[in-house]
Image (cartoon, rainbow, N blue to C red; front, side, top):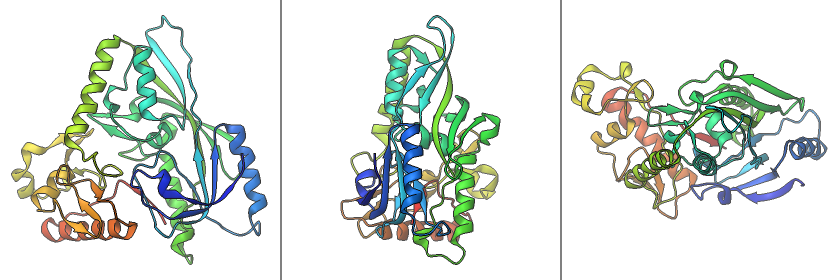
Length: 339
């Protein structure tokens, strides 16, 4: 295990977009992570130099700048899954590593007849990323399963354990995401964008609560969710999932809400799907360079093969401006930026 230099980040992005990380650390255990962060201190020119640091999970929900990242990117690959409960117990608890892919976790659930995560069928990315952004779909959210989260404080190298309540889960957010964003915003003052990444903790693992169930039923429901995504999401193109958060109905003008009332869904509270909003605004197929608003699901911006981060960013800005002008609504990104 060692810190690598000038690693192309597009190889770690579902978008296949992104420049190079000046420093890159891939770890498969907490011990490796601690050792790598100690090594990182030795790399720094000065103890007082503030250099960006970013945690890169499965490469979804993140737009990486073509200019790369002039700091350290940590890529956790902690992939252990341990069952804390007896095999005969109805209630089951798993300790799942932050680097475990959701797909692999669901396969484990099928093999061991564990119910509770069926809603996540087809969800890309890692558990750590899902916890950080409180990922959700089909009226489910990862917060519904989380009992406790273990993380490593990057500055002190101390292990932290947070209860469900202490994780401060919100719609597509948690304390791990919000505190990183606050720190990044603080560090942007007087600094270039390339120094904006500033994470404070690495999610090491989470304890999830599940229940014993029927294997066939669990597998059937997961596969139904996967098939739903295949039919409705533009999986034939590189993408990073939904770009914008859905719109809470209380923010939608009454006239527009009446027009689109049949599209309202619970996610997990009543929302107007942003995909529907973009569709009625006539934004399907809108392009900027090699980036395009998907015809299949307009809350996805796809890479047609030559897209740059600037293309995607330009399209995002144009969409926000159009929706603001048409409906006086402020769209909020669900994705994270690595500048």
